[in-house]
Length: 321
Image (tube, rainbow, N blue to C red; front, side):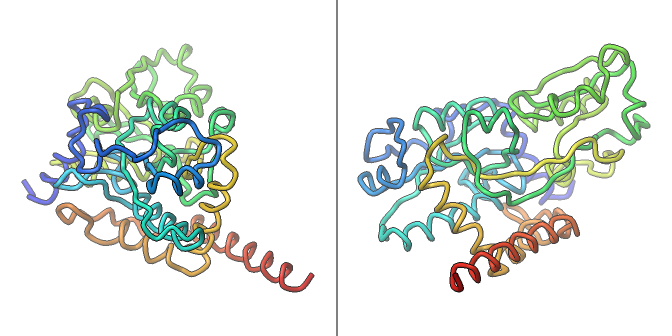
């Protein structure tokens, strides 16, 4: 077995032990935040008083948010949030502001944000109307398409091939609600299983319990990249739905949301977003050098270009009232 893929697979499949935040071994995981983690409508003021900001991350969402070989948080979104906090330090004069990383699951991320355990959630959370009733989102930093992951031996190419078969979704994600109508589950006699993590859902396809796994295409690609037998799997069919990943903050936390958006906009306009994307999607990534081999899509490049034009236009209007 290829050593890099084997090692990265162990990182992803660590979730099969269903680690909880309280048991996670990340160095910063159990570090207390200096101030009480009570719900606060102004996180920036709480951060100034406590000297820390709590950031939630996931441990198997390659390449967005996962743990490296030392069980430390890493990934594309984690790096984005590091830079956002650096911008907050500079803008608000908090040079010693510390980030405390806390492991979250798909099911726990919103409750942990609402109850003040975390202040920002930086993994791969899609913007949906239902979630917007519970939390606030930053501007988007990634566009995804929901597709099917299956074993080549199953000869599945589209939704019509799923009739009378079992499929899997991950609990706490929005994929099922986004495409359930298209599946026409009852009429097509489709049985649904739900994994507790992306790794567990993928394992169900690997072991034959499910014929296909449905979620964002980039997460599927990350799972295949790190599998011991990547050539046994494929992502098939057209896009079943599209979505946008963004950073979550507490509902009504207007100052933090604005600060996050300013920092993200600067990263996009400066072109740093392209450098970061290339680093995580087209080059070997930690911990063991697997490569996603996913150049930025034209759709995403155009999305960032539109955001850049809008930011430049707004700045011009501000300077020339």
